[in-house]
Image (tube, rainbow, N blue to C red; front, side, top):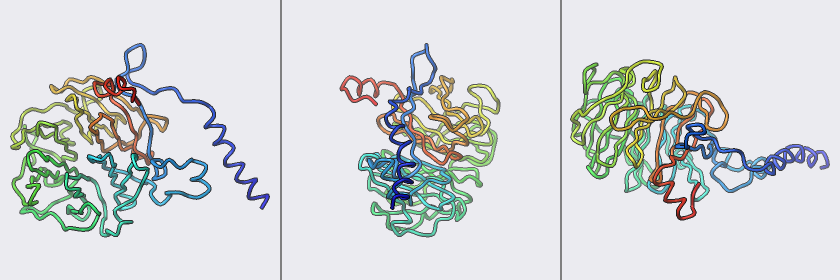
Length: 344
């Protein structure tokens, strides 16, 4: 018994000392003396990270250890603040709820049959849509994570990856990577509607597209990975503009992945080769980048997916480090929280 207690003290003592060391300095971009625009908040590696359970208790009791991220790929944040994280190594989709301090996964809820889940999205009904690039299908679950079925399409999927919901315009979009196009479905009926794009280097064409998002106006942003650009379409799928090219300076891309838009219209693009996230204005002019290679707070290695919630908190999949990094855009939403005394 004494040896057990001694062992626990060896484990717990450093944790207690660490917790008493005081707050760590903020990690922000850009660096001083410029005013900060992006702030690192925290990282999630396991279910226990969203739980109020103490670190020491987790070590002793093993709380939430079943929901440990291993090889994350895609991420989505729903209207209730829950994070849906696809994990290709676990062939699962984790659901972390920071507000309620809970964690689960779709397989632990009874859904089986995933091979390589990549993209995930939800709608206002609570339905969950999951792309599987190995099974070449899109799974549809209800709000209780029960299987509803699979998307039916006139053009069979060939490695579907990114997925996005446009509630206002009744659309569900799926990036069909090896077919070099985007498939559009009616969100209410899930019936196939149209194909956007096709293999090409010209405007509106794709070369292995991977990720997708929709802004508040219904504009569609698609990462055209092997053309090293972001392409923007209107809600009818008509090409509007694009930006980016292969290169190694700010504003260019090497391996673009996730794409998102914040409440002020800034465009965020993850680059797995640069190990950062670049921010652009609507004209494609680079404004800032954050992250950087490493495993320290706010750094990333082989990042992939990205999601932004209604309060402009940014969630980036840090694949190699087996975690999701959380940042805050210090814009108008942040200023409003500060004014109310509820800043991060």
